[in-house]
Length: 467
Image (cartoon, rainbow, N blue to C red):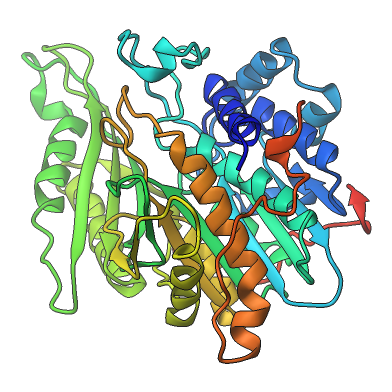
């Protein structure tokens, strides 16, 4: 790849890094993606509610916050048309290339940032190179800026290649909240896919390493609980109060006492709790935020059920009431061995790849599993791959950064994997790797409660073109 091509990928990623936005508030991000996709010239572009049913969203923030971020995007120059089409926090988009007869292939990349204040240390590369987050208190601390760059690069490389088939790229919002995978999986865009790739940068794997597919992602759910009691004077009439703070403490202690399960690993955590107004007041309100995880979806459901029962029992013990709300959740879905083998094969032929690991345990949770599960249920194959990067500190930290050498590697691996599926699965021959930009004309070279049932909601309207 030419120096100019590499610089284009770097420029794209740095542009996204400057403008991070949190889950369901990625208005400016969607605006920038649409600008690039229209410039590329895709065959179909579904924006916001055209890409999925808004009612399928999970972990949707308050309307006031959504409106505030829409105004911020407007102030930064977001197109009013895009703001209208994503109004109410219906962000993200789906791009489709129609390249003749052949396999239907999907690629999922996530687009949201995190509520983390980015480091101002002069040694932090985004500071030194002038692309630190311009949105105080928010940053791309998990590499989604790189993921979007890969999605755009893959689309243009495939368009310029000899690929025959259909490519659908999901620019998915709200991964960090666990809320965006489900609506994308309910969209009709997933229905006919034979192959699906999802990707993540880093995850403690060095630059040059590619993990062809993850195993054992944990099924997960986020739970919020609000406890209501009765307030009274703590010294004069304590017997007249129903102490929400006591109920909160009982709930926390007993949540961690939920028995583990013989069938596999489980996790429970209370990540945030608050209650009380003054030392002489019996608290009448408490709130906590918790999560439950399991090695399988069934184990997650076990922990979630026990957690909800614990919360209700703790409230009842102290004469309080509790509202328990499942904010978001995601299932477990493993990479298919056949597609893992294919990714490993093409990755070995990509310049800059020095180490190919067939599989690795994920150890965390990801809502891309919704899309993987849907494709697998329909008889297709899915793989979630990792492209290594030398990040100076861990994900979700103020000094997280991406080694920009991995941008070209990731783009080439994804493009080679997409281009090679027909040859790999039409015969016993394994598709060979290659340079995603060998054909020229790429983006890099331009100068400019329970898991919800599957009901097939969110079908797009209209046909073809930019919806």
